[in-house]
Amino acid sequence: MHDMQKELSTDELMGRFLNQLKDEDQLTEKQKRIMEAAVKLFSEKGFHAASTSEIAKEAGVAEGTIFRHFKTKKDILISLVAPIMLRFASPLLLKDVRKLMGSDLPLDDLLKQLYQNRLQIIEKNWSQIRLIIQEMQFHEELRGAVVENLFGVGRKLAEAFVSSKIQSGEIRNFPPLTVTRALVSMMVGYVFFKFVIFPDEGMNLDDEQEIEIMVDIILNGIRNKE
Amino acid sequence: MHDMQKELSTDELMGRFLNQLKDEDQLTEKQKRIMEAAVKLFSEKGFHAASTSEIAKEAGVAEGTIFRHFKTKKDILISLVAPIMLRFASPLLLKDVRKLMGSDLPLDDLLKQLYQNRLQIIEKNWSQIRLIIQEMQFHEELRGAVVENLFGVGRKLAEAFVSSKIQSGEIRNFPPLTVTRALVSMMVGYVFFKFVIFPDEGMNLDDEQEIEIMVDIILNGIRNKE
DNA sequence: GTCTATAAGTTGATAGAC
DNA sequence: GTCTATCAACTTATAGAC
Image 1 (cartoon, rainbow over the protein chains, first blue to last red):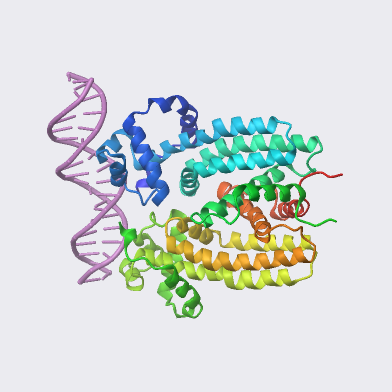
Image 2 (cartoon, rainbow over the protein chains, first blue to last red):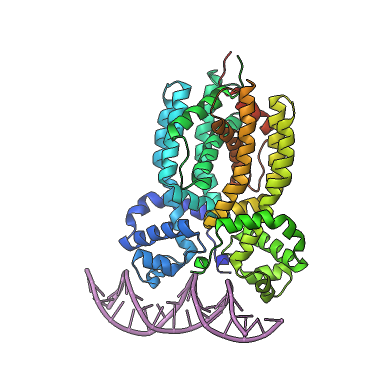
């Protein structure tokens, strides 16, 4: 049971997560190559199906080199999570989203841009997002870190936004968390269809049109009230 | 590269799928036990992380017995897909959903029941659904079969329903596929939060309340129009 | 001389054969 | 139901770079 060795606790992982910004520059060329190769293979074949020898070959290093830099194979996985999450928590959630949410755009334009923006980021980073969602299922500490950091941050931002719009009277008076989840669910569902169900073909309609209608539905519902 | 052996084509898999109804009774006690053990371990640990020896132990058979009934480990996985999908395509999608869609319930009650109904089925079969979604990513034939059969059937049903409601004037005139995807996205998103993000704790609100609001949002939107 | 990369092991478990 | 060849993660002895 090679998975049962000393596990990193969620706290330790969060520590890494928070310290990663400065650490990122301290990575050697080889470490970066190994991590890049690992992201590629883990997300292509899954964590268990990708062997360290493959990773070594892909990275262009000897297999032993991997274990000079990472205690275990799982350690490579863990080391990938923090930088990936950072790329979502810091420049993205905090900058673009805050800016959009602070703007005084009409609600429809704001939502459209928000969806478009998130979708692009998800598309660009899909293999890594998929990897994290995949492995979350099997590594408790990993899920803990994602939920605490990424989801915690996102949820607070979104709920604050929704609450303010409820108070300003723009949004009906529902529980903010439920409205937030509805907004996010639309995106999750769209992503699910686009990337999980039809990863190859692409969908019939283009994203912009689809998002336009999605926002219309979320804002006005599907019921005909003439 | 044990994944690269002779793959079952989508057609062969669909063949199995269609023939499974009669085959299901022809399974021996041992085969059933092996398959049950495999579903359990594959969905708990993932396909690659679950070993055939564990499966044998869990099923209470000798390891060799597995390979008397299934050519390869992957063959076990493939054999699981058809019965699982059937349990979704036949009794559920076709019976409950058709009945609900054919009823003349008001749209909100109809949607609430539909969501409630689907959610219960997903909850009851979550480990199997998760397994299929997981392994779809890595086994092309499997995804082909799921998309063709499950998704194809579901989509046709849902689109027909939405189209009829658009023609009757109950639903606004959007592309039926987009409306369908919006309806399903809500459920997908809800399931994602409930089972993937917070599989342990359970959510703050109970499903009935959440679904009630979700249906309200989908039907009437979140914009305040007083 | 230390520090790092490497490739040839070692061990154990795995899928699959007999 | 036992057996085995294979391949996994991981180790270590060695050699090269600074």
